[in-house]
Amino acid sequence: MNRDDLVALVAETVRRPAEAARRILAWRIASSLLWMGFALTVVLNTLLFHISSLIYPMPSGAIAVPALFSSPFLYAAVMGGGLLLMALVLTQVGKMLGGVGRFEDVLTLLVWLQVLRLAAQVIVLVLMALLPAFAALVTMAIGLLSLWILMNFINAVHGFDSLGRSFMALVLAILGISVGLSMLLALFGGVSVGMT
Image 1 (cartoon, rainbow, N blue to C red):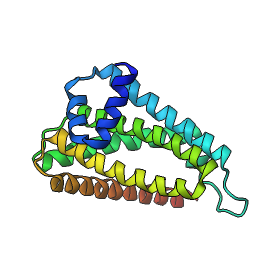
Image 2 (cartoon, rainbow, N blue to C red; image 1 turned 90 degrees about the vertical axis):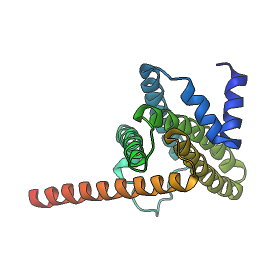
Image 3 (tube, rainbow, N blue to C red; image 1 turned 30 degrees about the horizontal axis):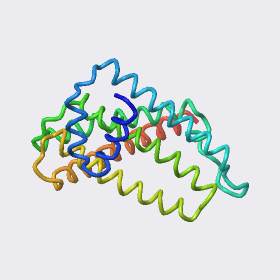
Image 4 (spheres, rainbow, N blue to C red; image 1 turned 45 degrees about the vertical axis):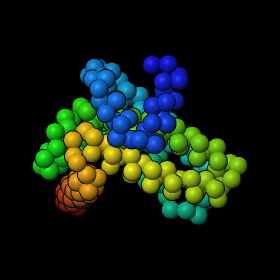
């Protein structure tokens, strides 16, 4: 794939995300390349996050930065784990709703979406230096666009016939992940209290 093909794919993802998803899935990317892309995406997102935190540090009066955001290794681990968990849950929830998507295909589309978000974050970082108020609006627009693309990706990978089912799959996946994380936090909190 050359630069023109990449630009065309980005444009198609924004304008016709379902068609872009089907084209990406038709490539049948090798497992080794998928995992390399996954790891590279996590590393680049982590680097960009910490570069932006150095350029725009939190105000002195702000709440202390959680360990998650102060440690690049922990940030990368949580981001990578979260991406894998999202792919797994979206795969299983989609199948519960009659979808046919495989874990590898769901992960492929999520990695591509993260690549696009990475590029968007670079644009926002530049805008924050030039037009901070406009950067906030662009960030909101990127969030909404990402949601729209993700719903179309879910629709395409699972072979759903409506975005309504994709939306339901996404809501159930988020609820499932939230409940799972809450249980883990409660468990670790209980262990921590018991040890003190």
